[in-house]
Length: 362
Ligand SMILES: *Cc1c(COP(=O)(O)O)cnc(C)c1O
Image (tube, rainbow, N blue to C red; front, side):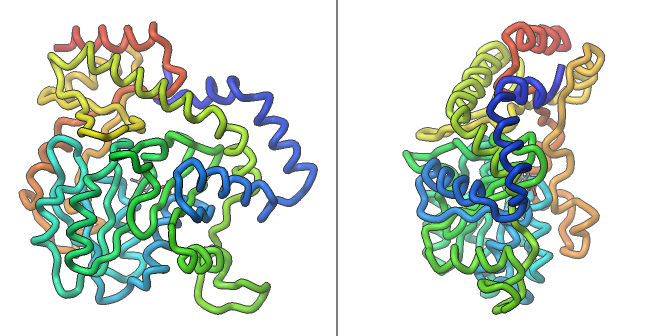
């Protein structure tokens, strides 16, 4: 059994993907081929936002979002400690300082009630993460950002296909970043990412930033990056995109089946009112997590812990001066959380076996 079955996915769409890849190989337009722009248009449409700018990874998308906002040394950016490291890593890479605030116990996302107290005169922006594909508490986060004149970046790396109160993930904040890492809800076959924004000025600057700060070849207006999306990856994503809505509903069905069977014995995911989660991860909580994970492993069922150590306790961020106990909710969740196999090709039989092993483990 696979945690994310990329082979089953490839076999399901193989005819379209193979044709798309061959077309790129024949064209030899490996950089900036027409598929890149077609994908940008397709996903801008999907998310419902004016501009989409493809790039080389979700991490680069976050970093370029910060660069476009002019964030750098002396600035503070508020974010969650319960996320993949890229969210906060990119803040440090720009020269700014990450400031963590605790998470909500229900959704594991940034707690808007804790935000205000973390704002200082140096605060420039907030990065909210849609963890596991569940949108953060945007109406409240947007209010805090507006009150203090802060920019807002949405880390939607796990959340393409999610929504809150009729607004799609990828459309929140001044800029949103997503990832096409293979195991994300919409994955390519390598690294890839994208930025979304309603601001034409940001989009134009991002197109230059991702290409060494040039608009015209060898005329460099600013310091940029080498962060284009490969044409091959764009072609693969274009071939997969028509199937994505169906994949999202399969994920949601699998999640509700898990929750129905397991909610008496585990803390199952909460979907907040008016929200759609894409379940990038289906994560349970148990005080006996390590025992349960061992039972799954013994039965040949893969699982994972997203994430075992909150960022404020990671050695990489030691110089920020945080200590154990600073963010009690994130720290508690990190000891209890674990993720089950979740992908659109998980069969009912596989799911039943996972459920049976979990129930027996307790
Ligand atoms: C995966 C992920 C990223 C980084 O995306 P890459 O494409 O792997 O660089 C950033 N933030 C979150 C929350 C992620 O899950």
